[in-house]
Image (cartoon, rainbow, N blue to C red; front, side, top):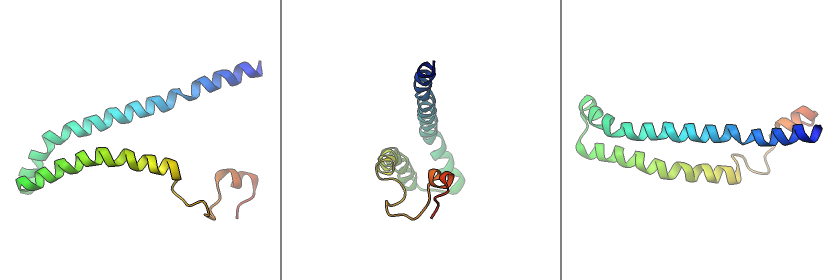
Amino acid sequence: MIEAQQDTSRRRTGFWPVILITALFFFWGIANNLNDILIPQFKKAFSLTDIIGVILAHASARAAIIAPLLCFVVALYGLTSRKSETATTEDIARGVAP
């Protein structure tokens, strides 16, 4: 009985990450498609030149390349160094905080 409960919990854990990634991909696509509409409006509202408009379009396109690479590096190495003195939530729960 316990093995059956653990087996179903393992199958359910993959559902929410897939939903989250799908939603983030969808919202990133919306933001990317709004660039073509918003940049001419920003040029009018803020008196931007054509060169600045091109720079804005390039910056958003480059962000679509750089952001996943940064996420990969953070996932690979983490945000803190290995020698950090910070306590993890497991340490605090066990009462072994530095």
